[in-house]
Image (cartoon, rainbow, N blue to C red):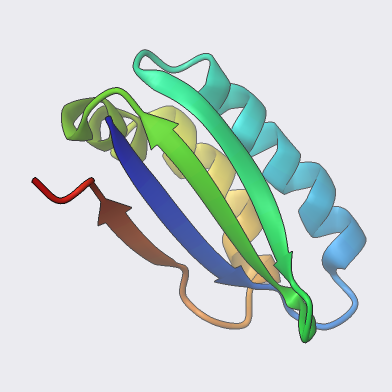
Length: 95
């Protein structure tokens, strides 16, 4: 299993719209093959700074979702609401 940490920063005043759209991205990811679980966290010192931590069965499953047309279309709605590029880190347990 791998974990994927997705970091995003929302532009000022767009939080409510972002919440709705990002929920849609997560709902679609849940249906993707290999998705195990996920949660979204908010930075306590900056409410516009969001982290999504998702567990995937394998890096190949994550890559399939990440490169999918479905995710690309959903992200096309989210990207304009962010004031920075998203940062994605793929993590695994050390051996």
